[in-house]
Length: 263
Image (tube, rainbow, N blue to C red; front, side):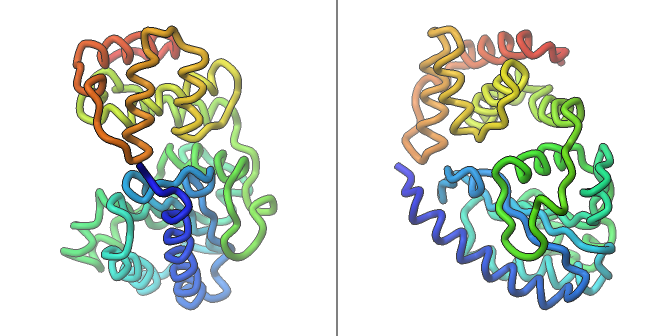
């Protein structure tokens, strides 16, 4: 099983290194660095989690600053958890005066690692736009996020309208009936935490979502949810996560409860 305490300490060490380097790169243009996701919720698992953080700047970084920021993450990749880092750079004004979908100046995750490695200047230049996921990240930061460096989060992040947060998290599971067969752990736990928000207004981690699901959903789904939680926490894979029929049934029922049109 996952050694949560040890993983959290290693992740904190990496965040300290990143914070020091980003402060040097961005100088007075850095507003702050804010951790969200499993590390903020306290359920970070080295084997199955990534390190999620938002960098807030006074103005969009210059090209050379973008390259240095990404280069630092690439240098740290060998010491990072398998799922790596997920980082977005956003302007302070878009946090204080929330816009949806939210503009971003730079983004990094394992999905884009190969692109950055192949052409760092080119990939940095084109990696900007808007991202609906930021509504969910900002909401988590306001609830449980950690101000790692800089201005306190309460002075940076305005409340995200509930309808924007709901649209953001629903977007993440809209194709659940298809995706659950490829990534059952992620989809099962996400469906639980989205339903917890829809029904009770709760902003939960994946781990907390699983506990909520086992308490509030029909008992027939307890095995699937428990198996997903065990796997998320670093335990062995279980048969329930390979039962295509059970997974499809769970996704179909959950999407019906969430009123998400099925693809």
